Image 1 (spheres, rainbow, N blue to C red):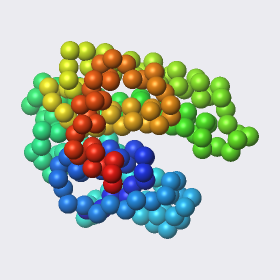
Image 2: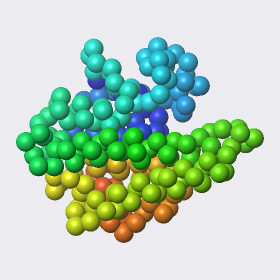
Image 3: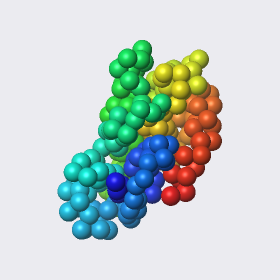
Image 4: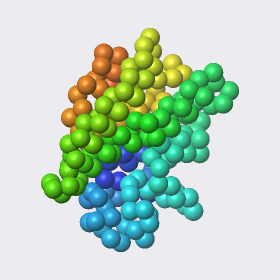
Amino acid sequence: MKLYHCQGARSLRCVWALEEMGLDYALETLKFPPRVFDKSYKEVNPLGTVPCLVDGAVKMTESAGICEYLGVKYGPTPLAVTPEEADYGLYLNWLHRSDATLLFPQTLVFRYSALEPEERRQPQVVEDYKKWFLGRWRSVEAGLDGRNYLCADRFTMADICVGYALYFADTLGIKEAMTPNVEKWWTRLTARAAYQRAIEK
């Protein structure tokens, strides 16, 4: 099993999940963005994005999908919530919300505040999508009310995937995301040895 990764990118979710599960994998860390700095990478992933997980004949490029795949394929593991559990639907909702709802506006903040050349940067877009992100992030603060983790009364892949959205918010300087319940949750997440190993790698 091989994972293509860039430091600080959403592929961090996959490194963290692999470390939590103690799976054997090779890690190839590329310079960001790989489609610019490593043209040959497009032979691995034509999208030119990270992550890309190669597991035998399986090739996957969606970080939350990779986390779900690992939990099912290499389980059973407490990191995955099963259909028999009451919080199964909630678990899947958080996994998909992590990218579709929470990461999407952040990518626009990132692009128009840092990636584009100075003359193409758009402060209004940055401000609008920062507000959009924070409006949707309120669901995380509310979802953690009376809970230590997002679902199933334990740490799961949902915490990894949504946790990365907070990691990225911090990278972008969106400090308002660190609300009271979120802060306590994040302290628990970052104290995990697997998280610390993932960051080190």
